[in-house]
Length: 25
Image 1 (cartoon, rainbow, N blue to C red):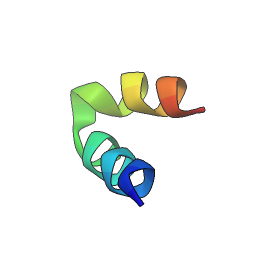
Image 2: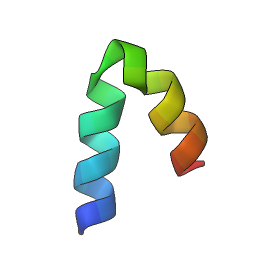
Image 3: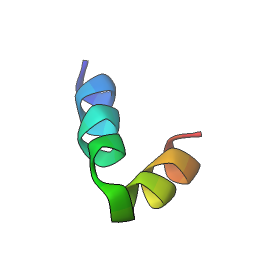
């Protein structure tokens, strides 16, 4: 699943954690 991999990569980043979490949700 690409979404799962992208989410983990974005979540792992501290600055992108906010953007990734908001975008993913």
